[in-house]
Length: 156
Image (cartoon, rainbow, N blue to C red; front, side, top):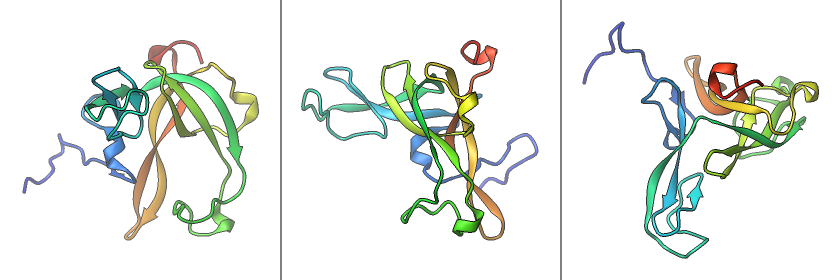
């Protein structure tokens, strides 16, 4: 086993590592694409609901999209949600559909929950966000989308 060095940062603990590619400068979403008709899926699928093919290949879906629709989750989700220890610690969060370059709409947490800061069509960028803690105080991360900066897809 190789020990991490100062030049090789530790990868974050992820709630669903199979959904992300952390190899580049920024994380990207991983899904699948039907090799017969080109339909994209997230998460990855084993069969195409468009043409019935079972020949799907892994697909990097990218890290940018546009906010297609959104809402604010203002109450603590019920199990199997495991992101908050109790209802007293719960903080409302944004949830939205992000339309990726492929046209696929991905449901995701948003880093914002203020309705005055969210608008349909705004450019969004993928990020990692703490989701929960596991002993001994190690953060587990999930993916979320935040407003994109001008260098990442245009004006937010």
